Amino acid sequence: MTADDSFSRLDDDDYPAYTMGRAAEMLGTTQGFLRAIGEARLITPLRSEGGHRRYSRYQLRIAARARELVDQGTPIEAACRIVILEDQLEEAQRINAEHRDAAKGASPPVA
Image (cartoon, rainbow, N blue to C red; front, side, top):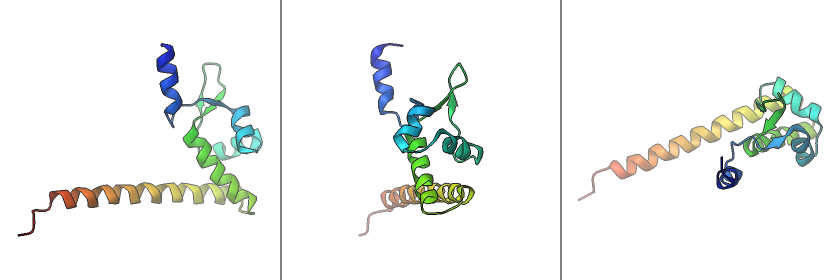
């Protein structure tokens, strides 16, 4: 891998660039919180060759949303479920918009 390859990964939202300690620091939470949302299957961090958890920017955004809900008093299991549902809804809305746009492009011109 070249240096250029490494730098291009910095723009990849799914690249597991952050250690557990760094992720917890960035989120202002504990490593235990990250473990808990992993156990709740909200996010599944990738593992380094040494078995250490690594998090992507996308996973950190998901974890940050869960933390917001927990900070508001929502139990962690419920917060994880809410975040999963929000993410599914956003994806469904994106797909619907793509289908609408495709349908508009496929419509015959009105005479």
